[in-house]
Image (cartoon, rainbow, N blue to C red; front, side, top):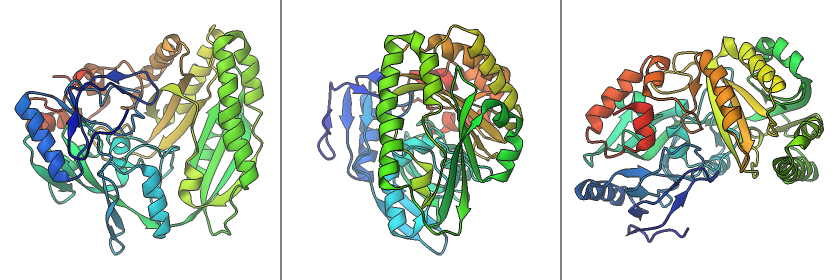
Length: 442
């Protein structure tokens, strides 16, 4: 789909998310080139009786950004506004892709403390849905926000931080697009550092038996379990004094592109066509990558290319419940007739103070289940969700789930704080849509 002209709008073009499972046909699409133009678009939509949603790169698997009203694309609102080395912050326009931010920060000798495993999203899209990596002490990208700008339903531009509009700041860092349209974000940054990554296979039984120690001993620990096997791949990232020792270009091409993307795409296509082959494929895939250790700057360690398309459900459970929950998931898959070709991803995060963060008020562990694009996923996701919710699970806002406001009100101690703020900032639901109606209520 082509991009609208600067500051202008067009109508009738269909929008589709990255995974292809969500589509929408907005009445018009606007690509503002300035905050003033964005504010004018919001006011114009209100005047015309149209809903407003902003969309980034569409990496959410839910309909968070879907609308039949005005779709705002912030792709011209990009770049770094300001770097404050004294206070250790960077202010960036809302439409800036994480990839561009990470590269620009590295050139300035700076880095975010933690990040997720892909960096295709815009900064506002990633933070608004609670995108996270894994960390013993460092939390989600949204938890690194020190300030933000927000255009509200009235067309007012609010500047928010712990000192200015603190109640809005407390909620809008993960706001689901329900409180307004973010125009800029200020992140905490630090001098760039090195991470040493240690990747190695490990049995499911050993990972689950030693999980508490593996979590405690490493700054960033994560692992992937391959369904239909007892095999896992683990990754431990810890700060290093160096020297820099990146993955060689040839090995990176072989393992990260040929095996993890090209060959993985091919075997998933085979599994989709002939599901009976999946357990055998899983056993081979789980042994395809050998152990490796490398040292590099943060974004080159935390992130990886993800070119194979899929759909995903992810839940945060109390960290203390992770092992029991995961064992129940494995038992369910083992005794079922399901055929699952994608590994299950497990990460952690410390408790934070953001109202709708999946780690709000509790140390958390994340379990993500995936299915290859075009493969029936409902039975697997339904069975997994039943296990996750039995352990007080909180669904990732940008990934598939069936929870509603009644469930989420019980799962989040500060849910009422968020909805009361929404009632004040957007009483007429200018920023509403069907997804928000389900998860936040009317």
